[in-house]
Amino acid sequence: MITEFMERFIGAWCARDVEALMECFCDDAEYINIPMDPPNRGSAEIRAFIEGFIGTIEEIEFIVHHQLCQGDIVMNERTDRLKMNGQWIELPVMGVFEFRDGKIAKWRDYFDMAPFNQAM
Image (cartoon, rainbow, N blue to C red; front, side, top):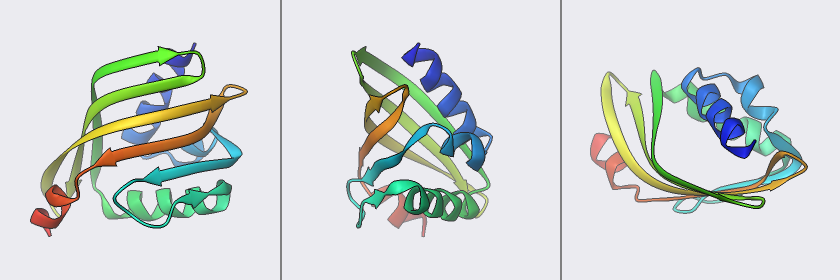
C-alpha cells in the first residue's frame, strides 16, 4: 500500500499537482529540506513551499533508485531532475518519510545545494 502511495505522490510531483500533493500530508505534517531553513510545519507552510518551488521549475522528474519500506517508514534514494530556466539540474537525494494514518507525517530530504548553486 505504501509503495503505491509513493508512486502516486511522485506522480503528483511530476504533474506539478499541488492539490494532489497536499492530500498526501497530515494536517500537522513536517517537511524539511535538510540544507535549507526553516522546516515547513503544517499544511499552510508546506503548501506555500510547494507552490513556490513548483512556480520556479518548468518540469520535474523523480528517479527512484532504491526504496525501502518498513512499517510506517519509507526511505528512498533518488535523483530529482528539475528543469529551471531551460536547463536540467540533477540533484541526488535521500528521502525519509514517516507515515501516520496513511499520510505523510514527516518528510526529510537530504541533499547537497551545490547543483542549484552551480545552475544559478
